Length: 123
View 1 (cartoon, one colour):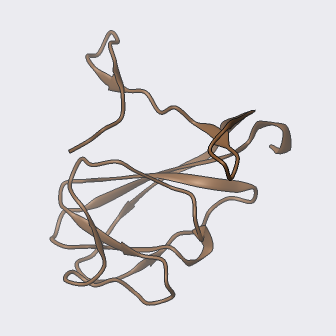
View 2 (tube, one colour):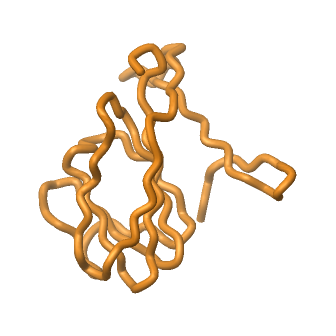
View 3 (cartoon, helix red, strand yellow):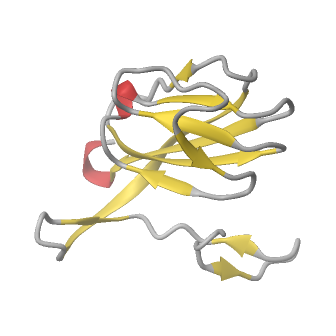
């Protein structure tokens, strides 16, 4: 189930992505993040796609549409049956090992939406 806050707009409800930086102890650092890029990737069943974040990326918002997908970040490619599942329409905000992140569709028709974010002062 999607847990992002929802706001109203002229075209209906839309998700609001709160993108801020927390310190290791969980406190707000006051550092805002800014968008660094967006890509939409059609995924093939069981064929891994390696995420290629833009320079300066600290996190990626991942949202599959059309079908479920799986991801892995341990250097092993996901398949349609192995990896952490992300359901169609679910959002995942990921901020660890972006350079090792791979995704794969569990069924045909999966499109992976990726939005990258980085520090506002470094962009």
